[in-house]
Length: 217
Length: 217
DNA sequence: AACATTAACGACCGGTCGGTCTTTTTGTTG
DNA sequence: CAACAAAAAGACCGACCGGTCGTTAATGTT
Image: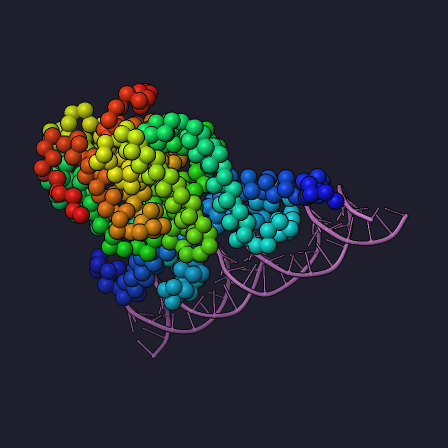
């Protein structure tokens, strides 16, 4: 019985594998049906496991939903936030954040397009622990955009008059709208508009627009 | 038995009154819970009528949901679209449409903020008659914004280079984002940003910005 | 007064929901 | 091998879901 026994125990490893598989499926399902529309029976069926098996890992539906939010957040951080942070600080990093977000949607990572967009509108008027967690995560995202914009101002790449709060609001708005309009109408056109809108906005506020990419037709 | 017998028949009048009361409550409930979260039992309870009484007016839940979409659409037309169309054609009418939309949210007409925003994200990835009807209504709204923008270009109030499609996308995006962010965070600040964003955008594209109102602090 | 029509109700149906409990299977350890 | 522990299954529960049916009450027609 060593300190790493837990990681070597095949039983626990199996449980962890199952847990990840369940959360993967839960995020995918919830991106379409919402966290409330996510039913334990259907979730279990879609994985070929039994419903009661889920209760071996989470004591209630709500705790599974909370874990699902956490899992979705981790996914976004790894696929969007971290890659964007590898770009040079300033206006290019801010643009990369929006660009990679749209790319995440283009790549059809989730069948519903965006887990957080779905649950934000699902829970925005329904108090409770789920909503609280979504509020936190969304606040983090907006503050991240805001911080990147502020850094771009400090670096002199955005005009001193530019408001980071205002800019963060607008960039997020265009990302959210891209999700729902692309689902309702023609996808490619909408994604193009969401990119152009932010590019135009950044170009108008930039001290040297040439650091931004061309508008790809 | 005159031609206007139907309108004089107290039985039919009573039914019509009930029908309107049900649809009013349905739109309000669905703006919070979504069209799927709308349960017939709770809807009936909130009105003090019996669940089976609802089936006297609609043959199925889906047909009630469709009627609810229609009812919500009528509400928006009367409270936002028609008042905005009374403003002079061009950039002022386009601004009025956005301004009145935000005012609709500020006035807390619906407990969930916006019926269509909720159901757009609820149904955007779920095929069926409900989604089809929402797609139609949303398309109408976007084309309306687009038409107003095009009229402003024709009137020479917006620069010839301005793209009505792009502008319509951006204005709608800022309206939608105002809804969900105001529900998750501080309301007044978000509404102010949604107004300023569109005002700035229109001002940048206007040939004569003085026809637009000042940015009210 | 007799009858037709409409709105609305209460009882009930099969099915699904989240959740509990007991049992079986799978893997670890002495 | 036996003893044990974790993962997973299966049977089952009360509550609620959308929906049906037979009935009653109110209104209008003759």
